Image (cartoon, rainbow, N blue to C red):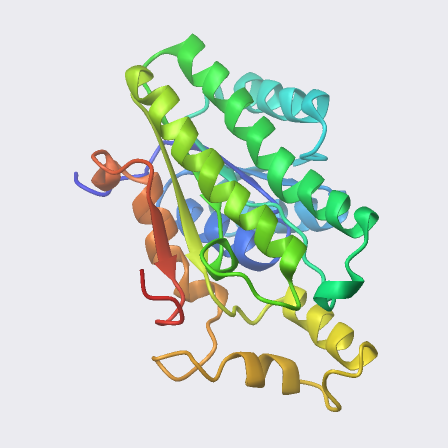
Length: 262
């Protein structure tokens, strides 16, 4: 059946909450077997337990995506439990509000380590497993509107998401011969715990005065007239994980309500 994900074994990093959890829930409800991977072991376990209690197939694994050893262990546990790996979502990421002239080397390195190097390692290690088992596979990376435009309060975050797009394109070219597709999706403003953090940082920097002002101001250019929630994203993510996207690779699919037109 076109669009099928039933039976596929899918790892989602950063899936304890937010967009990652929504991706996992949607896939599990459609019959995928999901691995909830997160640095926060407690939230990963909670999400996996809730999915399992709802009739889905899920396990949780703690992972630091910037550690190759951790990612190798994650994939090893996945294959040990489910027998294979069909789809890898490199979704884990962090952000920070910081005026351009105030971004430090430490700020830059911290974000690039998780958002950039983490995606490189996750893509490489997933690809190695997919090549070894045969039959191809799908790798899906979380980009952003910040992977298409530079924003002055998020320069280092934007750099990391441009890196995600570049790694995705390079990997798509490198892995096509193995029938592994590599794509990313680009959310815009998504109402999650991450934006609650950014909202506090706007206030700390004196950029806004009231809670919710940052997200509301930043969202003025959304053509569809509202911020998104995680469930707005999962139609695209499940499509990219499914058989329906077999002829799509190297692409960034924007899911931003029309903030960035490319």
